[in-house]
Image 1: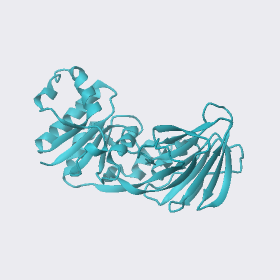
Image 2: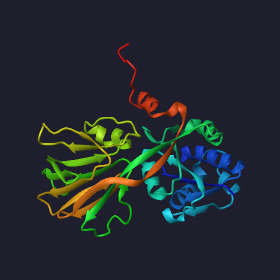
Image 3: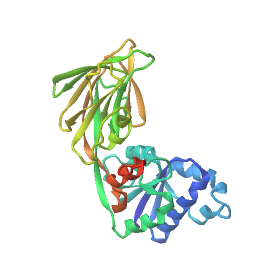
Length: 306
């Protein structure tokens, strides 16, 4: 039997009506649906509030198979449907990793640079997907190795959006020595430092004054957070360069974040940042390309004065 996986983030009961529509479409097309376990349990807990008159629709389905980790997802799953926002896709990446399973992002959240399918138009885009009217956008990830390695990352040493080095338990700035292929680049005296992928160029890096980069570009962005030296600006580098970082701080520890995952590291930890050995596949439709998303979400091409 053909297989698909579903992962989501619980927000509002009323939005689950669209999720039921997705289940109905997939079931009629003969797919076996595999749910992320926590999301499925929350759905069951709140099914009586899904929508008036549809309280028991879930009962018409057989209990779904569930997954809790990367290892639980069968390699023959054709697509992972995510139901939420961009953060949901970032969390879904930890389940997909290097399996090569494409992600179909349904936007039940807010901005939606990654989850570009509006939940209200779900049926239209699901049908387009099954008719093969879509393209695959392959996205590079940033990866990091720690030295010494305590195993704290537990295999999740990658990020689709960005890696961020940040201060901990202090309002004082930190100093981050940065090297490119072992050649000294600069010392960043700042609140922190962002190493962004092109996908992440519209996320945290953009908020810190970084450039927008086309998502399939072969680059990283090095972007300081509130730098003390005003001559320091965001730098775009080829993603085949290795970035080495050493942090100095008044505190004995500092923080790194990989998308939404945050870790505390001893000050003596050195970071080796590089291009991850795998890519993430995002399903894209002709009327929801990156350029059209810029026009919709950031109002490019619109003149509010006229």
